[in-house]
Amino acid sequence: MIDPWDVEEVDYERLTEEFGIRPIDEEVRELLPRSFPLLDRGIVFGHRDYDSFLKDYNDGELVSVLSGMMPSGRMHLGHKTVVDQLVFYQQEMDVKVYVPIADLEAHHARDMDLDRAHRIAVEEYVLNYAALGLDLDPDRCEVYLQSERKTVQRMALLLAGRLTWNTVKNTYGFTGETNMGHAFAPIVQAADILHPQEIEGPHRVLVPVGVDQDPHLRLTRDIAEKEDLIKPASTYHRFMTGLTGGKMSSSKPNTAIFLTDDPETAKEKVWNAKTGGGATLEEHREHGGNPDECVVYELMVYHLADRIGGDEKLREIRKKCREGDIICGECKRMVGEALAEMLEELERRREEVRDELPDLLSQHPDAPEVPEDW
Picture (tube, rainbow, N blue to C red):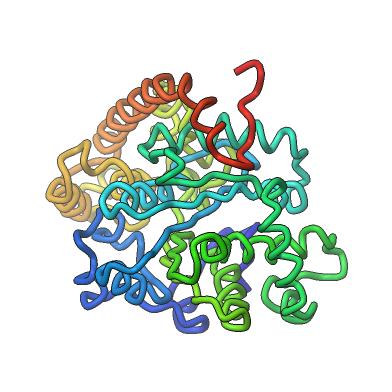
């Protein structure tokens, strides 16, 4: 059972075997106009109908990309993994991006007050999305709240008639203690995913997500066939490991690097992060370390490689780690400095975008309003 709301660890091999997620092989990669680092480094690892999406794109057919946000906490580097993909499809492939804000899901699954969810959506998510490079021009991107988009709500109510309680329960593991708002949230998610087809007509929609969201995709693909719509395509990326091991989580501050962390706080978190080094310096020098179990190395792979010298430098560090020729303190200092530089640049970019955001969001029907004390 994969639970979209409470995942700690995932057996990726078992997931692909049992649920039919396909690997992104060379034949699929050749369909891309050009690749991107998250795919090259194996972080984006699996898909459903990604090849069909890319073939439609190459044939000049209408395609779009969608990936929602649930505004229930601070935005961290794990969330950035999604935004980097949205920016690639928008900027490099000129594909329109849809960003539904799952405020209803946050309310029912996280007990989040709607007004608070809307504020978090603007201050943490939309602002950072824009700072990270997503163009919020309404011709290129559409941002809306689930609670305000009447066409999504209407579609969700109609889709509900296509599902039985047993189907929803078996997909998500709901029990008799589940409130019905939470149980209905996945149907609203399905309506979000199918919404671009309602606006633009039937076409292939790509949904780049973490593997915890696959239940939503499986449910939506089944419904799409019943509605004579095109089944959405999806790609799946690996979770970022939390700084202390396990999953990076907004609700556990010590596990995450938040995009609004100040540089010194981020450096301190990196210094205390779990590594794959030996138990002692002598042991590390003699037997080497394991970069595959090192959170610090993972930070480089996901978000900092270009700041430390690119893939060639990554391979060098990996080799030196395994041979004991580089110690954990050296990597931590390197990553801390690169991370501080990234966060400083992101803060500058947020300040540049901040004044533009009220006007940009006002052009998006059903988007959250910028708080009065902005």
